[in-house]
Length: 173
Image (cartoon, rainbow, N blue to C red; front, side, top):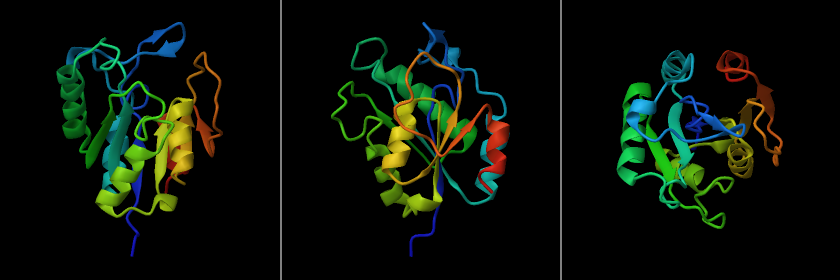
């Protein structure tokens, strides 16, 4: 029986502060650029104790665009996995929107669902951009958008819109 549940997290803007250029988030380049989002350590500990699988899913097209190395990206991801006690981390390095793993496609969520035998209808996705919400919606997760007022159209409708992590405790209980 599939009863395990997860919280899927986007990386940049949800787990770590994302610098913005033209009011759009950019990925930190190295581990030295990492600044954890306020309250994320406490948040992850709280839901880990409630038996949620914690899984990061992140698009990192800067590798394909030759703006960053796999080594730097993997170093950041490993640091976050350990620091936040995540069950797993999935990365899409592709810049091709037809790639099944590149959000808004749900490929990375499906990989996690299969590995951990997850019930996606009892799982959540927390993101700060339309691509995150699209992937969560397509996988039948409950989607939560942390509103950052980026300069982009929200192409998928999230189930919930919040201003910060603290508001999510009322949603996931």
